[in-house]
Amino acid sequence: MDVFSRREFLERSAILSAAAVALGNGKASAQAKPVVAATAAQTDKLRVAVVGVRGRGMSHVGGFLGKNNCEITTVCDCDEAVIGNAMKSIEGKQGKAPNYVKDIRKVVEDKDIDIISIATPNHWHALMAVWAMEHGKDVYVEKPATHNVREGAIMTAASRKYKKICQVGTQSRSNPGMRDAIAYVRGGKIGKVDLAIGQCYKPRGSIGKVTAPTAPPATIDYDLWCGPAPKNPVMRSKLHYDWHWIWAYGNGDLGNQGVHEMDKARWGLGKTTMPNTVFSLGGRFGYVDDGETANTQLSLFDYGTEKMIFEVRGLATEDYKGVKVGNIWVGTDGYVVCPNYAGGVAYDKAGKEVAKFSGGSDQHHFDNFVKAVRSRKVEDLNCDIAEGHLSAALCHLSNISYRLGTEQPIGKAEAVSDNKSLNEFAGRMVAHLKANKVDTEKTIGKFGPVLTIDPKTEQFVGTDKALLSKANDMLFREYRKGFELKEIV
Figure 1: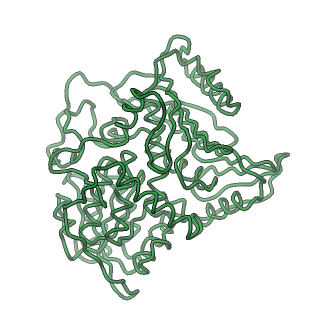
Figure 2 (figure 1 turned 90 degrees about the vertical axis):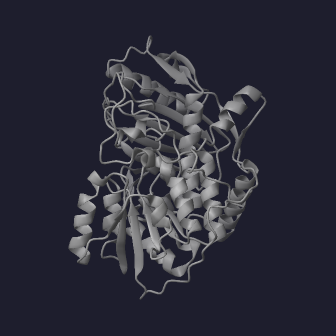
């Protein structure tokens, strides 16, 4: 386990256990009695249920199907119309069709399932994972691990209490090329690293604008699709995927593509706690549609002597230092550029290439998960839930600052901070918007407050009581009756 040392791992688990209690009401969940599975031998077949198979879930099907002595026995999705590809693929490989179950509650209660692999919308991740672990299942859950900050401490507490393996699907953690690149960064090969940059420059067009609610597809159980989130009218033309841009269900591109790069940025810096402060600004520019989240966003995470900068661009753009979706780490003796999931290039201060890193696929991460399921050692995981929680939390913290922001013309971002690097990125962001014909003198953006975080309690602290109340309320959410996520102690 190279991300945390054993000492760091134990310290991190203790922090999260304390946070779970401090943030909650101190009552243990009564949803199920703990079930502890025996160690699975290499010859034991692991029975897998894949939940959510419209998009990313098909990668989960591929990750387990015919691999590592796993059998996919169950497909679960609340929309019957999207299961065809999964059912056909599984039957073709295994010789018989898996069971199809619409309701996740029946899946977690099935004693003939060992693993639940979750690829649903973000708002369902935490509750499904906790239910699964309470019922004795190991869990592979897609990124972001959570829809809000507090969920991560609860998921980690559940993993520890029920002795379950829980891996988060930030698959770069298991790719050999990326692991080599991070080892190079953390091994002092580019000197003291004080800046990590994450970028998500990914085209995101308008999702359109409706004038009345859209009826959910007839094939879907919409109440079940909403689950723990509000059962709001569908005020967008498409139910599926575009939920990413609606706060009740998604987290914008920070929690979609961006969380991969956020995770790698933090990993390269070797940070195992929340930052000291967070600041974010941006807006939804270039079109008017039903999306609520920012399509252009700039964030600064302050860890003291080290900083992280993250930028989202959804409009047409050029790359930055060869990166559109990826990372850059800047050190005193050079820098490392990773423009994809599987590796990158190291340069010296003069810009001369000095090392290259490559190799990897999604399969490495599924293999790593199954290895830990069989060993029963959380330390074997490349992205344990404690890790996934931290990286997802960075996305949520940034979005909280953004959502609490004051409205000002976005052109004022050109001189937004006394941090030289952030100002450079802010100036480039304004130029980018102008290149997309956004009138930056008139177009309004949001400029968030600088929020201070206590890494031990994972809450906001400070002297502005009104601001703190609003910010801390956004660390969690209200859950619908029947879909409550309760504290684990």
